[in-house]
Length: 193
Image 1 (cartoon, helix red, strand yellow):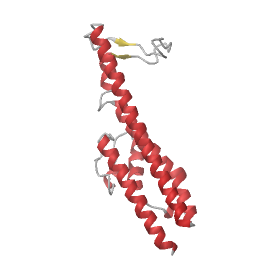
Image 2 (cartoon, rainbow, N blue to C red; image 1 turned 180 degrees about the horizontal axis):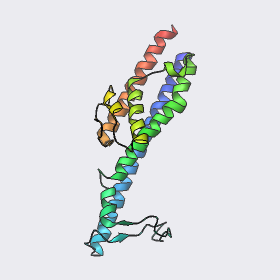
Image 3 (cartoon, rainbow, N blue to C red; image 1 turned 180 degrees about the vertical axis):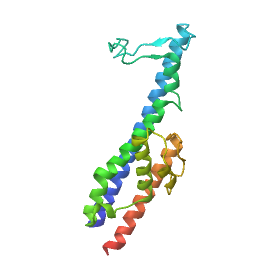
Image 4 (cartoon, one colour; image 1 turned 90 degrees about the vertical axis):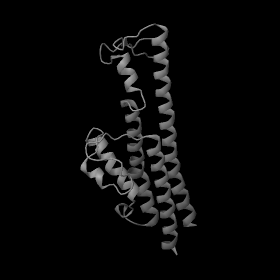
């Protein structure tokens, strides 16, 4: 039965999106744990100076020998791993880029093939918005472009704003992708009849 397979395909893509969100949550928790660990070590070692160098480690305190390629201070490390820091920003942005890649490079084509349509005929406002944000992330170093102001659903960024995908924003993205998939599936059932 055609509709059952389409239902499975919609569910599969939504699960990929949800798995990406779980990765995001786990990654954020990891950043939080690393930052807390460094802060505790800083306290116990009595290093109040934020300019103290932080050595990067391979595993279990074995120093990496990168000869100056990676070096940071305690202050930079803690800032980068804070909730609005660069690592948090990159984690959310990488997840958004991954979701769009799965859509564009796999699922959109599979939906099109299933419905015997051209790939560019499969459209979605939420995926279009993600495309605009993804383009700014990749081609404008994570800062919103004028195109981002054209988003239909994800109306969070103006030109020049730093693109930061918070928990709430990620949950909105998942919700909107779910709504799109539900509507897409229902509409496809009508077309099949």
